[in-house]
Length: 130
Image (cartoon, rainbow, N blue to C red):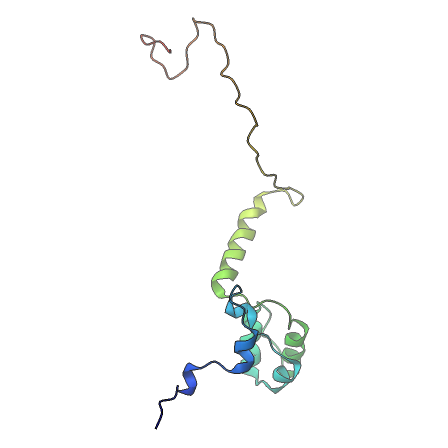
């Protein structure tokens, strides 16, 4: 008798073939229309919740809602919370505000020349700056 792997340890061939090593597993699993139509209400609600969609309504409404967003990425609850926090943090900015990358100058900026009688605000009076 040869040892064999138990069924729960091996991935189904349909899912294993769609998983890319560079891609998160949650985003790689996709559903077909046939699979969606065969789901019960609890499964439909679970899939809609993963996609951050409403879970209210009858089975027909849930089925149509899930079919409409089949290609939407599956978002984990942690990622959803991060997105909500980011959206809340960005409310302080004007909607048309844009980010611009800061690029260092190609040459060094020289220190400004100061007259000897002026000193920095944090230098004590009895000490002199070099």
